[in-house]
Image 1 (cartoon, helix red, strand yellow):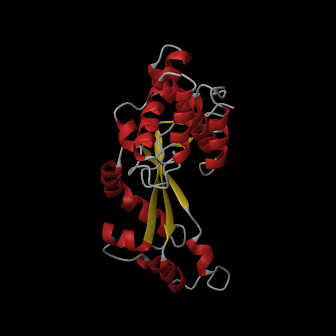
Image 2: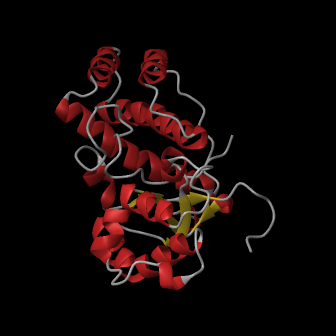
Length: 242
């Protein structure tokens, strides 16, 4: 299976399994050089760059002793006479395979499987070179209503008996935006696009603008909606994007 390489959400769980957020843990090790497949002349060169970034994560794991299994594996392989840099690259290969699997299946980091593959070292896991064909140079804002929006919907007296508050809150919308680099970049983009999003959400329930709340600003938007960032977008449809 070929899957794209992406940087996880900084506020989400770190893929190394430390229990910390990615920003608190391994992000700093990757910020300097995030690989883009188009930048490399061959799959081998791309994989070498990925392994190099994986080594930076492994070094952070060894420094913090989290997860402990990484340290124990490092010590075990060192007793076998392997060079430290070789050991780090082996562990990085296991970590990258788990990271790619996590992205491909939209699942949590499987620490148990990670430990099983560490136990198999020095036999290396097979890793497919990430394929950039499905990667879009876009990020996405996932918008979900909060209670003030629900209250407004019910004030319209339309479908009040048919749609529950829970259903309204769970009716999420996805808006594609330019590729986001960090939290500050996202905040700047949100300032530019929140008006359009606000109007789209209101219009989905009533096209009568006279019934829309007045003085709509960013502060009101944040009270009415949750806006969560998805850093990377993957298109799994073979047809051209329209």
